[in-house]
Picture 1: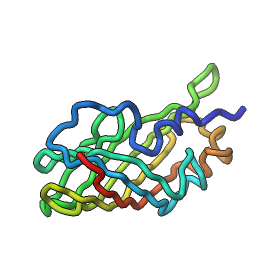
Picture 2 (picture 1 turned 30 degrees about the vertical axis):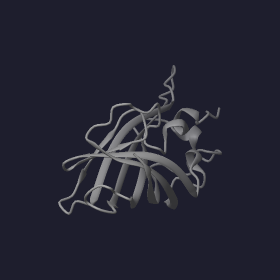
Picture 3 (picture 1 turned 90 degrees about the vertical axis):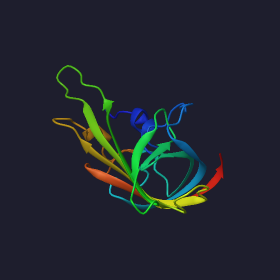
Amino acid sequence: MRHALVPVALAVLAGCMGPEQDKVPGDSLGTYQVVAQLDSSTCGPGALGSKDLWEFEVKLSRDGHDLYWVNGADPIGGDVASDGVSFGFDSHAVLTPIKPAKGQPGCSISRTDSGTGKLSSAAPPVAGFEGTLRYGFKPVGESDCEPLMAVEGGFSQLPCEISYSMDATRQGD
């Protein structure tokens, strides 16, 4: 039996998309329109709804050397390097697209998101940034993820990674 990938696809690429948090830590750098171009995918074409060109908005805020990436329910914290412009962040979640059932282990997948980039300037206003987003997926423990393999919207292999180059332009506060 093939299982729908909806639970995985809904949260996969934008970094835990959800209702935006009203309170953003630190000082706002603004809202940015991001254009992301697919660089590579070992997950397969169209895996989890991935596209060659992907556009989304993200808010950035900063508190000293802490950078916050906000496009979901919770800000993702990262660091700004000593040069004042290079940044990076990581997050991790475990998704369970196939729940365990009697005699079946189900499928749980560890998802690791990372972003690296450079802000256009160390001090506000920051006109934009460029960088890379990577999404890694691997089965957890004794998971049976075979029903998600070689199906439309599924994976061609696990573990795998999807990588995007991104260019962002400030849209406002």
